Amino acid sequence: MVTELSTVGRRTVSFVAPDPARTAPITWGQRALWMALRRHGASRAMFALKRHVAVPRRARSDPERVYAAIAALMVRHTALRTRLELAGDEPRQLVADRGDLPVLVVPAGSADPVAVAQRVADELAAEPFAHADDWPQRIAVVTRDGVPHQVVVVFSHTTVDFRAAELVLRDLRLLLARGRIDDAPGLQSADVADLEQRESHRRRSARAAAYWVEVTRRLSRDTRMPQREPSTPRFRRGVLTSAAADTATRMLAVRHRTTTSTVLLAAAALVVGEYSGNDLVGMHTMVNNRMLDGYPEAIAKLNQLALVPVDLTGDRRMAYLLPRVWRAALDGYRHAYYDPQTLSDAFGAAGLPYATGVSPHCYLNDIRLSADSDLFGRDVDEAAVRGATAGTTFRLAERIERFTWRTRIEIVDRPDGLGLALTADTTYFSTDDIERFLRALEARLIDGAFAEPSAEAEPPVGGPRLAE
Image 1 (cartoon, rainbow, N blue to C red):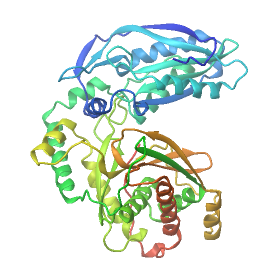
Image 2 (tube, one colour; image 1 turned 120 degrees about the horizontal axis):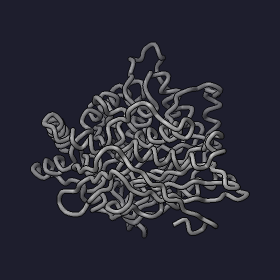
Image 3 (cartoon, one colour; image 1 turned 60 degrees about the horizontal axis):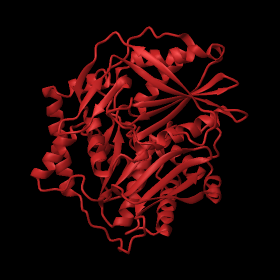
Image 4 (cartoon, rainbow, N blue to C red; image 1 turned 90 degrees about the vertical axis):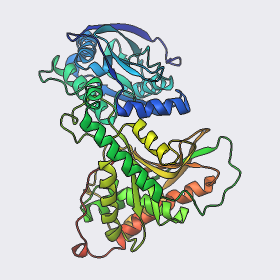
């Protein structure tokens, strides 16, 4: 691990917590990943979340303060000292009350500590977690002349989601700056698992399963796209970066009083419908599931997939499509918190496939850290926005042998525009098709921003941000 970095040292951070060791079932979110691990193996980098934070100047003058903050973080959050016993039919969470956390100490030398931190995070994330033996995070401290500058934290996605990771980093910053946190921590992963054993949660899960079965029965698995001999590896990813799509997405969100995530879901459904030939398309998206009491501050993996059926019949202009998409998305959002085993059982009873083979439906994953709709400083003149497409770039990225989705669209942060990435099955998509698909998505966003009825004639949309 971190084999390419020179002069890597190690520190052992010991911690002793006041609460006793305990066990708990795995959470529903953890079960979804456990089932995916059994299908695909443990080598998928998607199961790690990479983050790094700057060490404040006050803590730089006292390096021991950094390691004390890390120890305090382990004491504060039981989720960070929870291992997973994934063998057997009933996986468990094992919460420790004490232990030793290895911390890498990486000198930056003459390099930028931020760049070194990013490199260290990549290397720490490259090795799969051994969930029964490892803590669910790996930590490194990047130094210059012995002074700590960056703390790198790579989380296992089995224990935290995007929101939980940001909450943990918030607490780490406070501990580095102040040395203590007076407020009590939120619910932890084992607490959430206990709540999910309640009858009210089981009823919620059963309602979600009934919704998924009903929607799945309505969706077609067919496509008009011709099949071809797939490449090896079978799946290919392409990334389009577009400043024009970024501005158009923000314009649509502001005009229709909705979120950029909802706009992107609607535009993606349009393109999926055009390629598949279906007027009813199934769109999966990730939902953070933090609407219940105590869940907003929980340190747990709560995010789960939603299934959103988008009806494309009728007027497909954004002014008329967005209200339909929002209503469908809201229904999917309400049914995105469930026990995956309950879903599997319900699908089996209905004679439907569940998590087998390659899903014909599209997965839209908005993984931006910010879904801003601010237009300050942006030229929203039509000629300027359309002219900006001259700067749109496309590149082919990694190849993947096994994948869950025929099409997965990722919305990613890019410094020079909106990042639109498509991972597609080459049985249906050539590399040229991947680029054409993403450029069609860019075009639908831009056309929607400038070929619409007046704002006065449009109904308000509103709605939640669907993805983390």
